[in-house]
Figure 1 (spheres, rainbow, N blue to C red):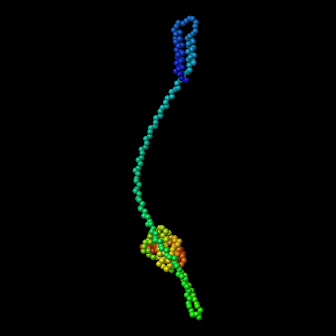
Figure 2: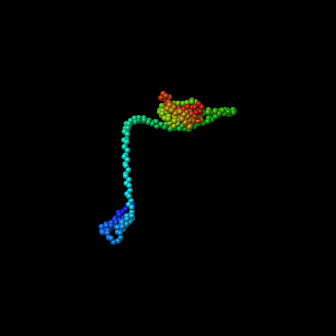
Figure 3: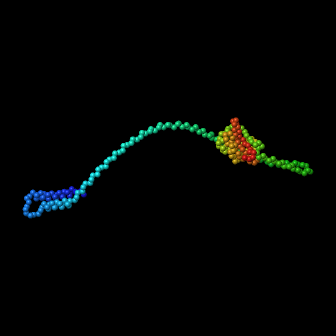
Amino acid sequence: MALSKKSVTQAMLFILPLLLLVAAACTTQPDDTAGPDVQATVQAEVANQLAAAPTATAWPTHTPYPTATAYPTATPYPTTTPVPTASPYPTATPYPTYTPYPTPTQAATATPQPTYTPYPTPTPMVVLTPLATTQQALPTPTASAATTRPAVDSYSELDPGRRADQILRTSVLGSANCEPVAELSMELSRQQDIAILKVYDLRVFVSNSTKVECAGTARWSRGENTPIFVFVENDRDGGNFYGYRFPDRGY
């Protein structure tokens, strides 16, 4: 432990007077008379004071700063390779303008035919005979059964307008064209002895740019319902036809 300045100052204040006394005793003539040995006392007191003084702690050994290690020599960055010049993309060719399909024109609503009124049942004729003769009635004539369909298997007519052409142009509509085709067929049937009043259960049979044909059940003005095909077709010479036909054996 290092001595403080206060402790050293107190020791010096105590030792200096003793040293002065010793110096004075040495310079004076020794007295032969017996007396206390001042010098021995002073030396003993100085030895006691020195022994009582704490031992000074040595300063710690100086540790030198470590030798600085030099930074390594920097490696230069490699020479960069320039980026190649970008080739521009070719100019895009725009898509052709889309041409929409023409809006289908709905055919005019057909005027329904009046309900067919059947002919009255013929009344048998009575032949009058003289009073003396027994009255005899002629046999009742048998009414001929109404045919269920016309005798010809198919009917068609040239379309002078553009109704058939419009249906062929919109053949992609499929079954949506069956009603207009049936109306054309009903119009044609009015020129015959037996007319088509209505076509039920229509479903597309053929639908392309040259022919649209639908199958259904025809309600006739005389007779029962029968299977029927209604059609619109192009004869590839520029003529458009519409009509109806009957299947050989049902559908």
